[in-house]
Length: 136
Length: 186
Image (cartoon, one colour):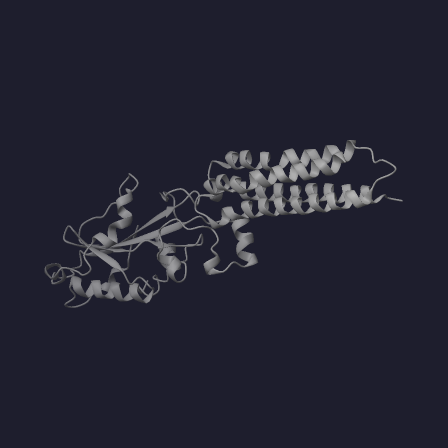
């Protein structure tokens, strides 16, 4: 039988990797035509990868490496899981909005650069929440 | 460049003013309500305001047609449908513009080899709003021709300035898609 903790880990991993893959495809579509980033598509990828890959790899590695203990205190783990889930979903949603936002501006790279203002702190928060959940 | 069928503009007692009225009527019917007039040797030139066109060379509808500035691919104020989003993602049009200039003269007109400068885009607003009387009274003799030059500009991306498109479609196709060809009696 799958333990609740395994389900929590699976949900977080699926959320990050599933959504992350969709965002990768979205940026691939946006940067495949010169109409949006011109000849500066590499700059868009330079903005995007640091915003996604560190946390994505953290979740992937933690889910793969961490051995689930036989006895877990669900009263502690469930709130930690919910916090990690909500912060992760909020961060990924803001990342998606930032990416879609390039379609609503005449200076897409400036917009992406500005979006770091809210993505930076939230990414730190998401990484912390995930870190606490997986370490516990 | 294309030379229009001259018979349409010829007739007993015709002068340049009557040709100008004929052109202006056709242009106004197709939505070109703002034009600029310029003197050229032995005649005049009439330039339409820069208009935004679609990739198929038909003009945009409504206000966006006359907005030459940078505009985003999507705009909440204009409404965003799923189709618009898909188009922006895969077949985005960052901006394509056209200016049509009619030359009415008995002198040869040769398009320049070098691309037009940025100032060409402001041409209609810098020109006169009506044909000078001294030109209008001039008889439209058989040596006169009405020639049309079409200039197209395109932005490579939403943040880039529009560049002159050297290999645009033939002027005749532009006139057809602009809704002018038939009305010009061609």
